[in-house]
Picture (spheres, helix red, strand yellow):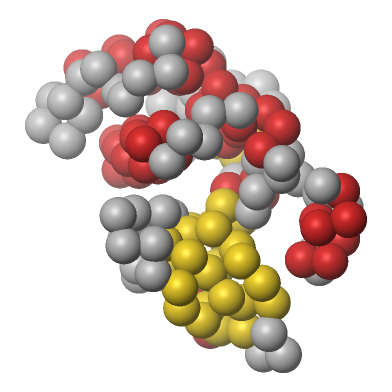
Length: 148
């Protein structure tokens, strides 16, 4: 089943797209509360399927990086304490997942956010990143629903 997982600027965590209203999206938090709320155009909502990371060659889609991380961690949460390790350790670990990441344009905060998102997804049983999070044609929720 294809999911639309969203990040909302200024709000912690990740959200699952539930439905679309006239002037907003209805999202559900991917945490213990599973709270539903509206998200408006002014909220700067980004689908994880639309995010990529800089490398020395072409940008790599986030779902590909998440899949590499899942394979390295055998489907378990990130094994390093990424919130506390030094920048050097963080980057060394990340280079085992994405060896050619652009060391100038990818910041420590980007790597930490990726690891945080990965842990949230794993905790919620979302592990088939390649199919669950692939981009869909069109930006309408109805387009995505038809594919299921």
